[in-house]
Length: 135
Image (cartoon, rainbow, N blue to C red; front, side, top):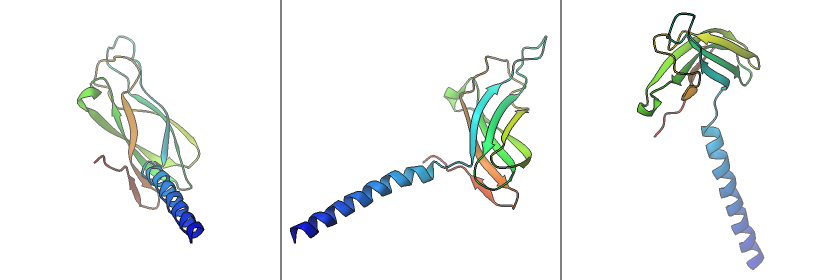
């Protein structure tokens, strides 16, 4: 009876460890991988930023029709984020390199963003992926 009890306990521990590692991985899934996200330098004779340059890839097997990003710049310590949507037809696995009209109205303070993440993806078939909200 002892070998069976040990086997049962070992199986339960293994199952719990597997469930603990799979849960966070599923919750962290995002269909868009951002390779780079920076603020564009001003045009000559201007002090304002010239947009937001985002390079990303759609993961999976579906074509996206729009992707909305939340981007933080400068005063991110105040949780100040702006959203921008890139619309078109975006095939999976292809690197997308776009400059979007975001932060054109702020004084340029360097290229780095404080945050850049996809918050919504609309698929060509009409379904929508939304980023999970923080508790």
